[in-house]
Image (cartoon, rainbow, N blue to C red; front, side, top):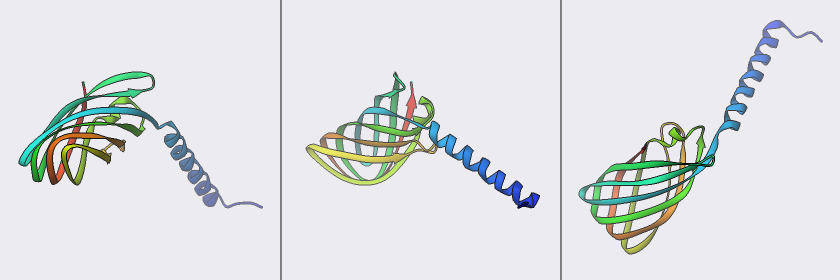
Length: 146
């Protein structure tokens, strides 16, 4: 059976597009991240810290910084560890991550969060928070490579 050339061209184009999409997704990789973040505030809060990305057998130093706005009171230290997925190179971790959240830490508490940046990197982190911190806020976290 003969297929008209327009239909054949469409089928070939769709097959090529599917192949490109599948090969792009197959190349995405994952790594592991550890971040230590110090946070303090009164209505407006700020955070800063450092961390490490382990990716393809190498370690990369990271810096963090951010702002919080809403109900923010107190100070804390948070240590987070977890996985970063959907990255092709170490620099894909760098970017701005946004979140809305609420929490309370008096002494020692658990923390877990999933964030995505503009490059599609997905951070799935958990850990612990120490300090006195109450918050219900919008926050932004910027991660840069050092």
